[in-house]
Length: 288
Ligand code: GUN
Image (cartoon, rainbow, N blue to C red; front, side, top):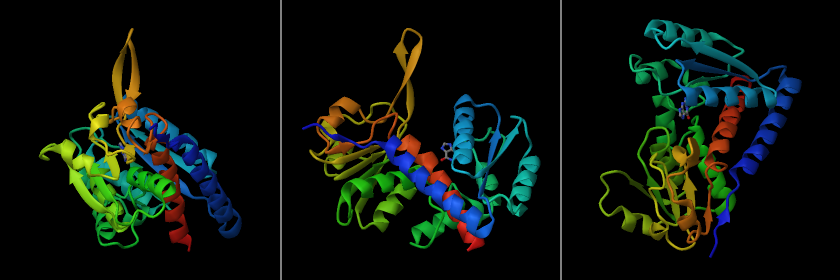
C-alpha cells in the first residue's frame, strides 16, 4: 500500500487565500488593516529565513508587516520596552518574537510580556491555560496546522488513538491538547518512554515532533495510520550539499501509512499560513 501524500503546500495556499479574503473584508468593512510585528534578536541564519518568509507572506495576504531586527547583544530592558510599545500600538494586532532567543535573554519572561490578545504564537501562559481548559485561545501555529490537515484528511477524529512523539511547549503539548479537544485518545511519548515502537504501533494518528532525522521507521507504523511529520532537519547530502528531512523515515513510513505529510512541503507551509490566520483572528477580536 502506498500512502496518500498530504500536500501541505497546496493546503497552506488555500488557507492563505481565505485569510486574504478575510483581510479584504476587514479593510473594506471596518477600515482596519491587520498588522503583524515580528521581532528577531540576533543573526541566527535559520531564523532569518523564517522571518523573511513570514514578512513576505504577511504582505501577500494584504496585511501590514512590521519587522524589528535587534542586535544579538540587545538587553532585556530594551526588548521588553519594544514589546510594551507593540502591545500599545493599535496598528499591531499580532506580535511574534522569534525563538530561540540568545542565551542571555529569559524566554519565559519575554513571552509573558506579550499582550495575550496579540500573542499569535499562543505561547503566553494565558493562552496555554485557555487551550488546556477548552476555552477560546490563541493556538500555537504548528499544531494548529497539523490539526487542520488531520481534520481535512480524516474528518471526525473522535475516538482515534493519537500518539504525539515529543513534549515541547511549542508543538508536543499543545498538539496533545488539540487532539484531546477533538476527542482522540492521546498519548504523549518522549525520550523516556518505554518501548516507543510498541506505543507508536497502536496509533491511528502519529505526530512526530522530536527534531531527530528519520527517527521513526515504517515498522513502527500501524498499517493505514495517518502520519504527520513535524521535523525539519537539515542533513548532509554529500558533495557539500544539505537537504531537509523529517523525523520519520519517509520511504518506509509511506509504504505502510494510509497518509503522510512530506518534508519539505507538509507541516512547514501550514505553520506560516496559521500564523497569518491567527493574526486575522486577533484583529477581528480587537475590532469585533
Ligand atoms: N521558532 C521555531 N518555531 C517557532 C514558532 O512557531 N514561533 C516562534 N516565535 N519562534 C519559533
